[in-house]
Length: 148
View (tube, rainbow, N blue to C red):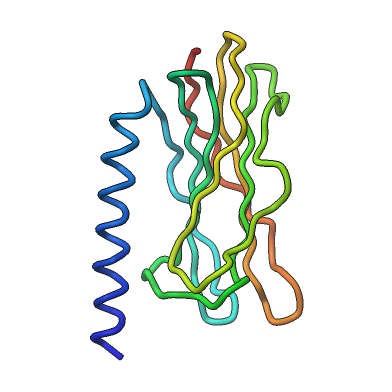
């Protein structure tokens, strides 16, 4: 059991490094919110964050993971991302909620992209399966603003 958890932790860590490396090369700039912690729900505690990106357009991302990198079963995590303009209006989103389609410790989702210049923030939501539906939604903190 310890060996399995160590394998999951190492895999998640390496995926995080790959994601961070690709993010720094693919995006001109980004700004992330602090993590929002919630749970436990069915024994799992989670944290989520919102990130706004600008480069070739502006878009938002939401990321959620278990606090201890424990793998949750399929369908335990729901996630949604929104991009907001300076008036607080949601201008782009990830569309429908997405749910983990396989066991994992964390997942992310991106909104669609806007090419209109302006100042944008990101805010997202996540949900946790509670045995009889979902608890939440749990709102991320709002990301710092970025200009596009």
